[in-house]
Length: 468
Image (tube, rainbow, N blue to C red; front, side, top):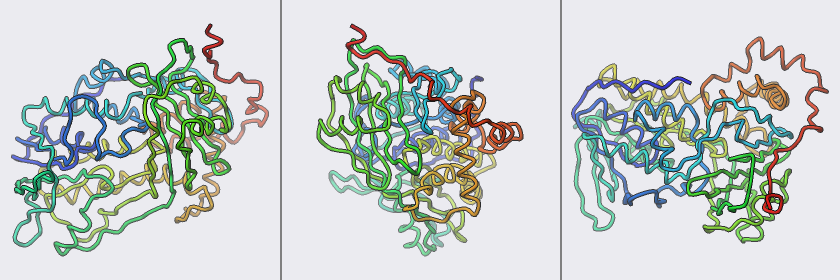
């Protein structure tokens, strides 16, 4: 796999400001550092040294997926980032070789594909990105401050900065900037602030999924021997709605997330948490965890809906303003697209800035509106398979769902189909790759008997007793 080239510098202005120290905000600030003399990152939380969970990232203690496309963008912005992350303790896992993956009613082949999933806690990942960002000489971080509104030109056609307040003492200040980027998450107040300035309310699309998941850290038993670094038990949609993932993270620990759609609340007590795993379609994660020592409380996170704000449709929008990450669009986190999509938005902002600062807000929101079509469709198409989920379904959704089921079925024994699916999943190829003439021929001519994996071995692992 080729090494991404560093993003070239292309100065267009003196000062840019990002508010929100999310992954999308950190990545956007890194991009802006190539285009402005100074960049300021504003965050309400205090950044503690090291890999510490933050109040402003309520989902930060759960399994996070940094897809290969997201890693490639981080390597472009921060050359050497991949090596830094590995040195910090991340586990690099081949998506099919190191991943025991039960999906579509069968175990996937365990042949290495060269596409990696990066296993670490969200606080560790964020701390490595933040460390690289803070090492840039033209980046300043103002933590412990929140943005309370915009500064604008007299005609309100341009945002010229922000109003700040320190929550601990109420002290207020203003900070001017030629470009302000909102990375404050799905609770962003941009819609209300724009309305207060006389702009129309941004149109929103919501698809109610009521996803609940509960995560816990366990100590990996010293005498546990396994052939995998990550295991996923995925449901057959729409018949099943429960999911479980266990992955190796730093310091020889396991991070486990369990959950499901439509309010399938996991138990909150020790015994119930493990018992929930026993009742999945496969018992392997239960067998691995029943002797493991819990190291953290059970942390629960609920996301009621997919949320997309259509800023690209607004007839009027101020210059000098942009948004990245969940402030623009937030997905069902089960699909693991959020961080990588935020990185793609930051990358797009940089590409727009290479054309100059003039008109960047307009160019950017139009381009991101198109960019989001693909991940939004990939995420919501799975959710819309549940008849209880309300939302507009494409006219050909029945045919598309059938075709997707065939992809999943044949991926269970055809390494080429599996490899293409993984590349699409990691946003390295468009989903249209699954509709190539060669792929369609495979799917339409596959013999049903070939998909029978009843004699295939399940992922092997040795429990403590077996290892002894």
